[in-house]
Image (cartoon, each protein chain N blue to C red):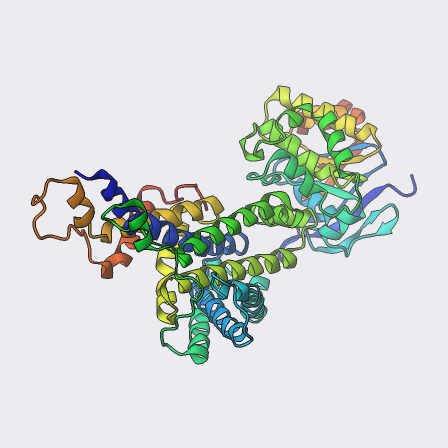
Length: 334
Length: 237
């Protein structure tokens, strides 16, 4: 029995990656949930909006690097974020003007807007591939580790290392800041409240003199910002590849639906539920269990429920269970 | 009364090809209460929506303080000083009572919004108690108070209420009617549709009895209550 080493191994292989991935999913799901709450459709282009935002962040990162600007120990991409958010906002507002506004004016059903968003998804996916191709891009710079595994081992004398990469720490900190800022905006500012009012009761919001065009515009800008930040954080953590972002759509939608579509708190809870479920099911537990059981008990097995290739299946299964048992999601969305 | 404060005159129109209103006239004077009563399907709510610009009119006019507002959108009429409380979906259920009131004042640019909120709390003390509670969690009568309060936040000259007492108990109904009288005493004109015809006419300065989208009887509330014809046909004897 070696509880301490087991805990460190758990933190290293489950807790830290789960918090990081959960934060990324939560930010993505918040964007999906917000668009659903205000514009009333499931935006399938959100994954590729994340890819577009990340590409913008990569381009601006290279630009800053070529000018010799860096953020010291932190990734330069953080400095590029505001520019990338601005570029993505322009892109998303342009899409709204070109596509969604037409259907909104026609008072089209949500299903039609959803299908339109699938079209937007393919166009955006192609656009992003034209810019950076399908290759893998590694754009994280600065210090690699906030807490290096070797340093942890020498400091504590434990057999198990614990490493916290800078990108992981940055992800969690940025996500907390974003969520706090978003909640402050929605609950404390006039514009934020008018967005909630519009989402709650559109007719009454119009009667109260709330300008729908403004609400829609602000919603798109926030969705673009969240998508860019989520995508960039994911790219810093894992590397950028356009198809991976396309594939992120499923866990992000699963998070938003599990938490309750349209509920911001639900999106965050859903993000962590999905992230930790994926990691718990696909983690190889042999190492952690090895510390907790007498030597030789475990044999050769990895004690892994599913190969990591199947982690998408985990979101699917949770999605189906939630839709069967509690279709409105944990926080009771729409 | 050459110029009634608000009048919808000879309104004819409907949602589609078929007219619901046939030359229907509704009017209210400053600080008075006008009540629209009539059987189900008489077009009471439709007539009021027509006054508020939510129904396309084939002919007829709506005038506020002598100004023709027939072509204005409902939102533009709010800015002109008209407040409207729909029959259903008339509050933001997920927002707190206070946020509901703040949203009611969205078009106001002045600094005195907090004063108006304080006045609403004086009028409906229970709302002050529940100010930080989600409006959707309140009882039916309290929700109606939030709805009326929200509409009052623009400091309207005319308040239009579509069946404010629908689905509330008789005690709450009396209470709401008392509040409506209080609102009218501050100089705000009230135009309301009511199912509870007898009680409504008792507080009405003017009553309009509509049948099949047209005016059947128009008189003071007291006169309508005393009219044997009206009593027999619409007030149950």
